[in-house]
Length: 266
Image (cartoon, rainbow, N blue to C red; front, side, top):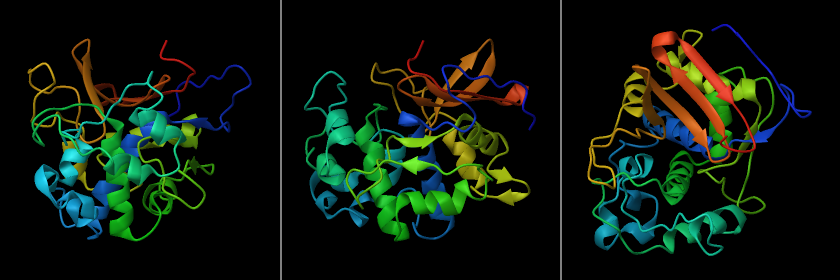
């Protein structure tokens, strides 16, 4: 709860806005927990078809919100970042995010079995939350987290088009201090200044491995509900991650939160 070190380079400062990239997935995962607590969503096991009619038939009818937040839907999204026709290209630069998601009708595998990191899952989850709460995802984030967390500056969540959908899988534009608050919130089990913002049981499930396999057949040890998981020098670590070196890293045994923003991973 104390700022130990802060440093900026190349004209950036504590008020500069920079892209979260996929750290936004952790915010979207938290909003799922909020929507369940608020009664907008019955449970994490609710079918995606409740909110997206295209998912009412075939194998897609078995996909739940839990499968989206844990990246186990089995949808055959193309996550190639070198292909101009892949999902990331359509997601970042297209103007109809929902269509880009629902156009994928093939499965890689049965839902719930294999963790496979694919951004389309979080894009679909964001749409489901938006439909459930009846307001833009950014408005719900502001109401449930940004304002209660005492964030010092406005943030900007990129849309697929004017008055369109938030890109729930990426692209919250903010600053290091306000991003770091999310790590502090999770370190305090969803409580902020005595107020429970996210259910503590949901937080706990978010930062432990979901019970499934990795793509190589080993037991999942990598991902929870929108959070990455690892160990370092015997210490448990969970973290938010963006593709160009954006991190909010939590080390609970050290009561330590690290926010690092960058132009590249290294």
